[in-house]
Image 1 (tube, rainbow, N blue to C red):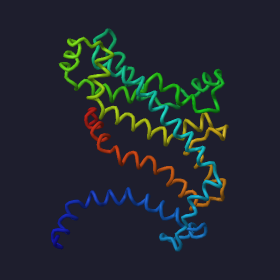
Image 2: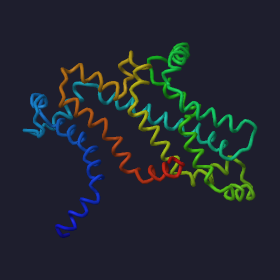
Image 3: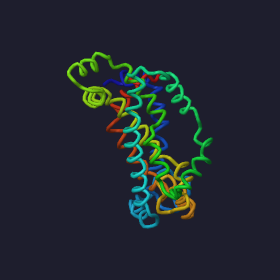
Image 4: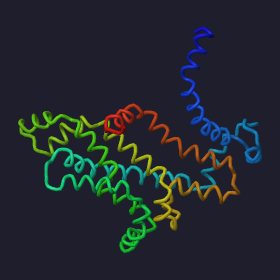
Length: 274
């Protein structure tokens, strides 16, 4: 490539390059700080004088990081699985069935999307307290068996775009509604399912409010977001260790999105989000 062509490419993609640097800058800063010594992390130096790889092992000695990771995985995986099991049939019914009150049901789903969780936090907390489940993550996982309004809306938007001829042909061949959903509709709806699954997984992985509300009093049920917030204040604000723990907490999300970004973007595009 000639110098002129390089300059033209940079000029054409200047906005994209600026946005990329804007998003990558904090990640690079976290990674460099995680490799600094405790004393250097409090200075204005941006490049480590020595590469302290031992910071990543030291955080496991000073904090129950494995327990936080286990709890976060339990919360994220189970909540995502329960959401898919409950939301897919509801979205299929709203997209395919004609029944009285269908528009009202869809309006209720949209209303639930707009309802802030803080509004109903107190009565829902009292309900779970009666079942003696406060202090655990189950009040955050079990409600996913009742569906998620945002996921139902996205799935429904995708399912209405699938031609009815496919399901009609399956019914002519003798398939009932359940077999039609499993054998015909779900394989065609993989992009949308992957998109809502990743949305739910990322939300649960980064959730701070829910674990703080229900599991804040039990250290054994803390998640990564809750544990990292406490770790920052307990250990004299050791920014190098805090950044190392933050980098480990971010790594699974980045890796998952890196491998699933194609199907994720396709699913978001096809669900009707403009």
